[in-house]
Length: 95
Image 1: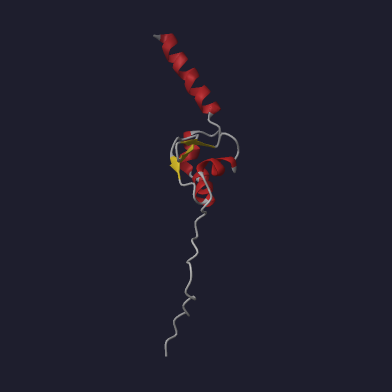
Image 2 (image 1 turned 180 degrees about the vertical axis):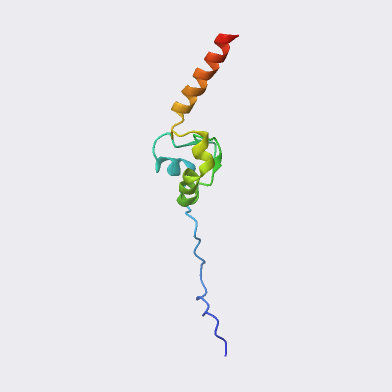
């Protein structure tokens, strides 16, 4: 007696990935400045790392990563960029 699960009926297999999602569509689903698109890749604007755009959960998990939070506390990256700029100006003023 076989106790395995019954097999599904023959027919087209359903894919679990979103077929119509493009990097541009995925970037628009998040706050402005969180992600940007270059070519066919979706990049995190804060840490400039390519992120898988097929599943929204991949993008959400990337936003929750500790490494990303260390690279810039602000999502849009402007605050951390301004802080770096001020440090460089202070260094150059001493030279």
